[in-house]
Image (cartoon, rainbow, N blue to C red):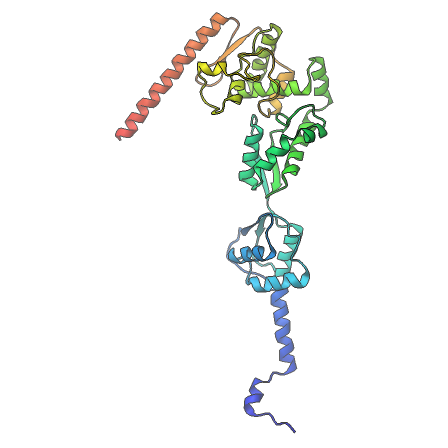
Length: 353
């Protein structure tokens, strides 16, 4: 008969105690809530290509979980080590490892990020904006937009998507696929450019590409809503009279170091987009115009103006004759010199102070 010494008795645990320890471990692995003092929650980013271990370590570093060890155990036992959705997650205190793992699998706690794309941005600028806000690959975004086969597959008779990406505020998850973003922007354009606008386009004997090209110039000339129909009217009047458009935004589009203040020599820059050298519209849009610029193109204001120039204090001054235009241009140059003078004076006083 084996006799237990007092020392062995102290080391021996009854089955109930062992069972309780096992239950406690299982509870801590699967259901023990996390705890941290941050009512607004904590954000954890899961980039593309992240391994299960890397995500667990990120959660641990952010203080979202009590232990990366127990979360890794739970993940492997539940089979949640793969198919983690990319995104920025917002986690709150009081959730278990099981809930966190389910969130990572289903993307429930992913943050929806609003991204505003202003009117008049080019493809490259839009790609850069999404790269900053969503962490996407800007080069891949641009490449898709310039894939002529992809563009034609969307039903557009164009070489690129320049002009067809509708400026709006979009809601996406962090690192949403580049093509999915582009698809949504194209869909935004298609939903706006309805049959009534296409009918108006036909009445004006224009193609969609020509409408967007025209609208992109209007967009580049003014950010004032009330001016867009007037500016569109000026360019329509010039086209009807077979005058060159002489639109500054078309020069800015081709300048290697633009956009910047234009010099006289810039007006001679050789390019099919240079409307100071070439008659008619350029080959394609110079940006992605907004809805109001497109509507201004299709419904321009009827008037006799052929010229316009900035006032120097916001807006433009419109003229019917070249003589009137020259007078307005001189007034603009005087206003600009006065502004520059005041800025130099202000800077001088600041430096002295």
